[in-house]
Length: 299
Image (cartoon, rainbow, N blue to C red; front, side, top):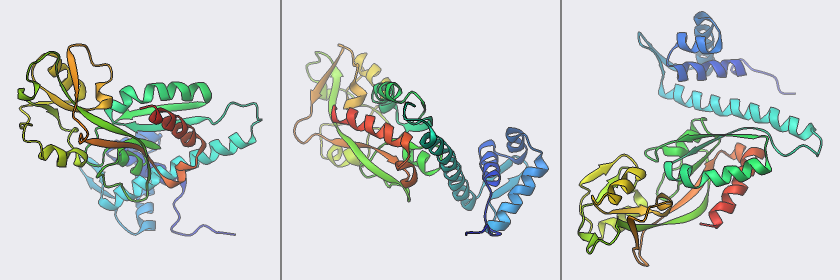
């Protein structure tokens, strides 16, 4: 029989670490949990003693995690989520076969175009087949650690992410869903669309397009920078320039926009899902992955 040791952290200690990190301070974290500040401070000091390092930098403006604290809080979030899954799946196993599938929250991180055009029909089918699942979607810019970072930090169970050239955070698993092609987008009927100024947005050009992009001497430096792909489409529709955009971003484009194939050497990017090895086997994540794969095969 395994016994607790002096370095084991209890679930309530993990919740306090997460609350302090999320709230940005001991007082705010205590208020979130309905505890006193002294109780929260005492718990954090105990956790630091057990782990053997300082987890939070204290200051007049609050408290923020140290690099060690960021790691600890990320693992705390993931551990607490696994405890939730443990309870949900144990209860699910005890229910009668008449009960309709897995139940409980399912936290999803997605970048804008997938949240707008991929997830809605996927979630509709998921709810129809598994009405007990409660999807919670966060839209995250696909920059830096992007959507995969949400999973690594324990804020999401599964992320829809671009896989090409991305450095997947350690300890995660990924699988491709589909390959997405890029096209030239310009005002409909323009006689020389390649002569137009380039409209772009910061998330657009990643490692999957950079090599191709650099070899195209007809593409100028972007003179108009937009906030997101929706703003790019609006600007192109208004005749302000051309753009090079992935397929999902072009769903629902109006007749004022013309989409031109870039030929057999056109750039593409791989879109897939990212999760943790532990959550990959959970019933809620497996149910979502089935629907994502069905949707991906149709793109």
